[in-house]
Image (cartoon, rainbow, N blue to C red; front, top):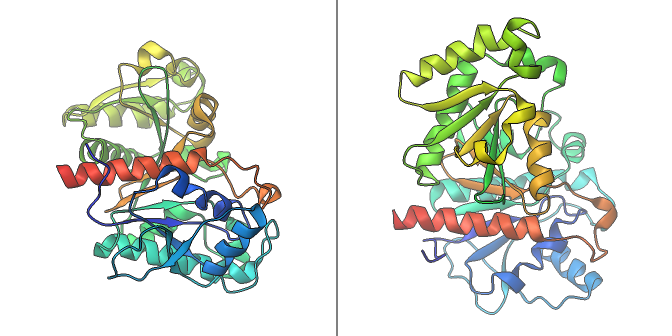
Length: 335
């Protein structure tokens, strides 16, 4: 399968004061012939390249134009304020949201085949533009007009990629039990199953579901969420043809022989599933938003303001996210 999607892949560099611009500037080294468009402030990229001692020709691009050759195409989107590497500025928050909106709307109207996002700082956007902003995932769901999306991270493992999806995302731990409902699990598992089929071309996905409590509740002695919510919901979905295993205790679920028998794992909360995945592949792990009507991948790390402009930040996760976006977009084109 060739990595030749029908339209370009949009790359957003995230918070302009973070490591996103540093990482984006390295992409031509790996993807010299790939159809990539960076959405961001051209001056930020030019100044960061100079700071890093990089020679990266930047080309101007607008929707509807052919991609320029021999350079990194940039859809110029003003940052909104002067940018200093490592010094976040809430005055750039509106520019960051404009960047994300252009990428999302471009995916919806066919301008782009997929979007890849470098990290933003939620607190900067909350302070400077939108106090209700909770992250890329929720923002893109609103842009696409979908009621629910699912966060899934992937990382290379021994024999196959490890995929971990989340039943709940950025919630205080005290709120997680109440957020796990039959309706929510049905929607999450349906989205996960449908995108494993539609985006990953897995004909009959096998999904391992973790319990919420230690030992998956120990028959109700360590919590009743498994008995009252998770088990009845899984039984209902099995009657509809879903291949589901569980709920399994999280502390023993990530064994190689079990992972090899499944295509994805559904964890009940953020810090149940992601520590294992990031231990297995930090730096090469990527975030994929399921349930959107377009492909969105992202890095597995934050803005790392302390590394911005230093030349020491690793681009491996952004490279992996870009490669995954290209592969998924090309697969949809070939289907």
